[in-house]
Image 1 (cartoon, rainbow, N blue to C red):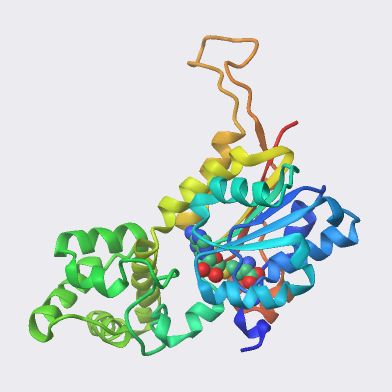
Image 2 (spheres, rainbow, N blue to C red; image 1 turned 120 degrees about the vertical axis):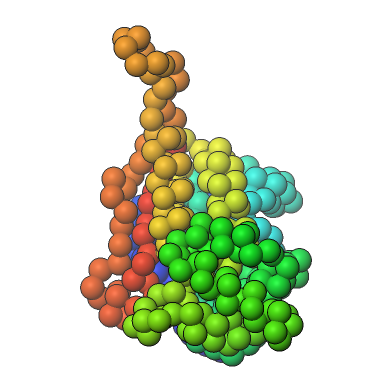
Length: 322
Ligand SMILES: C[S@@+](CC[C@H](N)C(=O)[O-])C[C@H]1O[C@@H](n2cnc3c(N)ncnc32)[C@H](O)[C@@H]1O
């Protein structure tokens, strides 16, 4: 597989412009095919920062690490690629900087959330309702729970809650009834095409089927990979790692993630003025961060025409104040 077909990186220029502003440690928490990491390293070199910089790339998927290590081979002395979950960012950064004797502080963190094109397009990974494959959806293939495990062991009420909460799917009850009936008649549901078939049968408006399929598959993927829990953790721990003027850039692809990023950034950049009406002259606690992107940055028409999968990308950036 060529590296371009592994994954086409989104909003590259927009990320570089807002993230690579000084030498130091850069962390790419979602390495994927290494497109963003390579661009960051090249930008550090172009700006004369590379000698005093180091990039740590993290991914929980071995295939991503393999693809990225080839792509970043010219920068092997300035980077380390680590298999792990970005929720462990604090320990990973401490360990790698210790091993490499690198004392620079964290100048930038990038999180390009969700799955890569390679993960979606590989039928055996089970992420896509358009491909026939095992109902898997684990980004880390060694993780315990697959989507099939969830669909076959959760009770009706919990599955309905899952599809409402993480898929915002209005027809959750009917779809889950279809799943339960199927389980009772045919035994465990193990394939993407079986689940897609049930969803299509339950959808009385065929023009809505694609949206329903993507919402239900999204809900399962979020639960399998605990995506919102680990995002909450990495936002807090990532922000705490930043040096003065260091930046945290997050690209999200659906509203649940984006809402979480937006409200975290708002909270971090707001001072605490105590209860209303007290009339303090100084805040009880001054904000330690500022939001760089008042509105989320989205791909322009040229990127959209070259890379339609970037259409839902939204970039937000937070900066630690000096
Ligand atoms: C959208 S892709 C990133 C693509 C990458 N920016 C590039 O330019 O090729 C997301 C990647 O992040 C990884 N990932 C998602 N959540 C993760 C997590 N919690 N910890 C580690 N890796 C994660 C996925 O396995 C996937 O390879």
